[in-house]
Length: 122
Image (cartoon, rainbow, N blue to C red):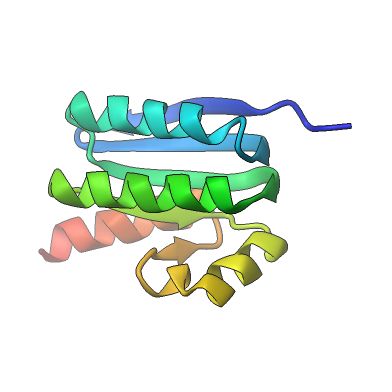
């Protein structure tokens, strides 16, 4: 049995948007996540925080979507930050080296606070 996949955008503020994912982030879900993120970037919100707390599984398609989103955000002078990464996914990000270029925080609140801190010191 698979977990139904959901994408939610619970927070937007200026150039920033939070995308909350839940369920299995796999080949079936990856295109929708990429499309939603690119729509946000095109709408002037290139700084994305992806909340992964609800992700129960992630395959290479999910990882590929994150890399693609990171590249598009970077090309739009934005950023991609990960929040609340489940343990299994955290290990996968580490093994693939993605943890070296995708900043991660234990929660969405921590990621937003870090972004706010960067904004006031910049």
